[in-house]
Length: 367
Ligand code: MRU
Image 1 (spheres, rainbow, N blue to C red):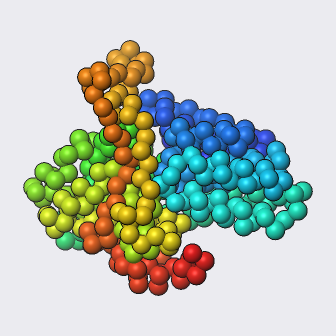
Image 2 (tube, rainbow, N blue to C red):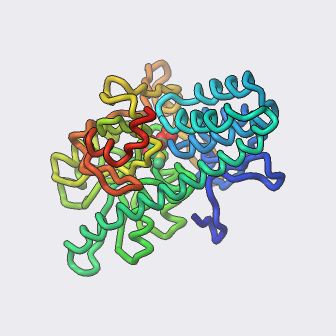
Image 3 (cartoon, rainbow, N blue to C red):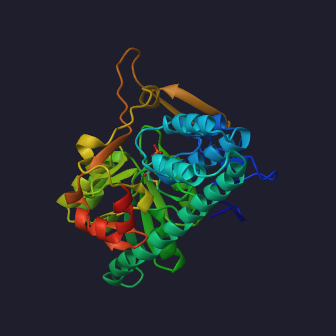
């Protein structure tokens, strides 16, 4: 996607062809800064501290982290240490393990001297594959928006609600939930996006609003609890969100608060879609509520809020009384029964074990 006329992905190789560059997402929307990853440890820190975030981008960064590890020491011991260190960064997004497994599969059969070149090659393939997958999700999801538009009066806006950031910043490019939206906007369909702020880290307010704004997509940032009210008043035509891990049976784990949006959508007969790239399917788990590990993050994210002062300084302030205990669950699970459709790179499919297995038979066999 473009930022002020310059095309960007979220991760790329530096001019030396070995170090890795990323957009530091902790600085957005206030500053657009590039960070350089020189070591596997840098990649692990970037994921853990959320300079990069979003399931597909976490996977791509981990893949490049393995390449950085192979460049410094391609031995079996060093690679398995890198795998473990990168894997320990964040527990919920399954793309992390998927990408690490892909890298290990590519590198293990090779001699140490062959590994660095192949590691960079495979990491680049994973990044490119992500872009193509998201393009496929966009193509599959576009007809949903076209159909909603066709049912409206000419020129009437299609209102889409999304939660968190499943946009191009969360992937290598295009985004998952946003890919159909960007394509609809480019096709001239009048879309408008309700952007949930997404407390506690505000990925909606900080990141989704930033990227939609840079792409010229009309949008409105709303407090997290607004969606139900909007749906009751006919102001939401569809919901589309991303996912960090979707089970073999179609339960969808995504940013905390997604489940409440799905409940409100069901109560108001608003279709609830999920942009689902196939590396985000975990064929080893079936019951999302019982089996998916939910990341618990620092209470500071709930107790404090960061913003820009009128003087342009970035400031963090505390918003709760001293001493009040805080809990910070980062994700929740929306049961498959509340999902209208999974928008995948192979089309829109039902959230059932049968439909998911039929769409991705090669993935079922290896799980
Ligand atoms: O904690 P984050 O910012 O990594 O959470 C991101 C999300 O929940 C996204 O919706 C999800 O990763 C899908 S990204 C295409």
